[in-house]
Image (cartoon, rainbow, N blue to C red; front, side, top):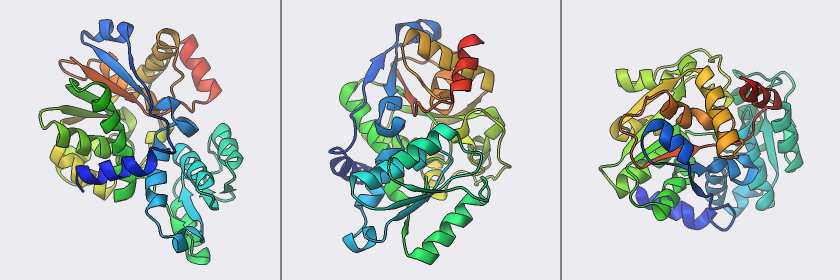
Length: 315
């Protein structure tokens, strides 16, 4: 993969997405001792960055392939991103979600017109159930992260960051399966080889960090963390091939720091951000990012459970 793949993706998806704002944060900048701006993907359509990759993947399909519909498996944001992308492009989507998926995300996915399959599905079996639907119907799978079109779509965020702030020196981005972090890292380091990019995981789900340290993909049990978008058990092969060559480092944060970040963003930046979306800010607050001068924190999503938001605001 190369920068031109991401530039092509931007040209394809820009008519359908929001060019999300890059917002200054005086409070966060003062707390961390450097200029920090927030890339507000929580304000993206469907409430998260996922629609970028979903649109780029679906737009790469032939008309014949699209006519068969698409299938995805997800606990939340990818589900909504694929559902909305399918609606915008007038094709049928079937989304496999675990039985314990956040109710608000299930409702939103159905509201976009997708068929949601939950019966007998958990985090471990959802990919298997989705594959069975593909085999039975001939629909096309839209993977959550381990796909070049998905990675390229997510990387378009970096193009917008550089357009709005060419002097940026550091980008901090959440890490789950790696589609977002690898796309941004590929684009950013291609534009400016000197830029630093840090990916952030919850401490309970540090498979990406362990993979970077050992030089090979490490699998873990489903982590127990409030960052539901980062409850992945292993980083994708395509994302890892990019991150191991280009990422500055992968760091981790505790869940309690995610609650603090959510509260700070809500009270001082007037932004509603979900736990996974707050990973980058939590890392800054924990001091995990050295010399955070001219730093962008990517807020990857805003689809937060009301009880988690209430917990953060009252903690």
